[in-house]
Length: 180
Image (cartoon, rainbow, N blue to C red; front, side):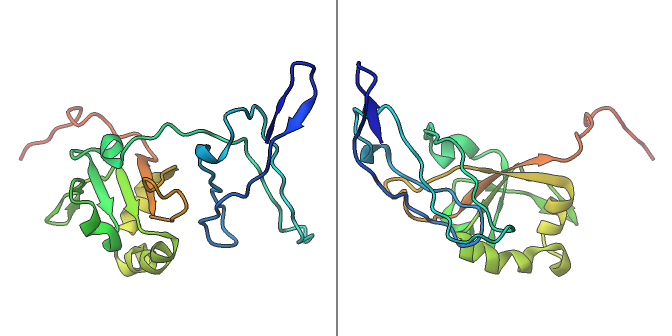
């Protein structure tokens, strides 16, 4: 990182490494707190070193982003139906689990997962082969991961938050009716 002087000369201002909280070889979200970047920095250069030259292995870089942080409670709230994975159910008492009664399931709008290792171990138990709720959500909903971080500990994999949207728009509930 560095800055450009009024004369146009670029002046280096230091370097840093990113925290890597992901598991290899999956996509990862490398993290660096803004407090680690000097206030005078106006430029950042990303350098990636790939020692694996196999054509099926490659690196993708995206521009750095500065997230606008809000609490999970502010984003999800207590009214939306949430699919809480087994391992995190007790850690989020303010979120409302999706309803299910007599074999009818309320469509969740959010999913909260444990850390990567917990999700990898837990998801097969809940998938369509096991008759679990992932069979329904994977069939009917598209999951989009929302970037999220643990307050005051950017370097910990706390888990993840997914926004669930229907793959097919749902019709107006009042458009159809029937009677016996």
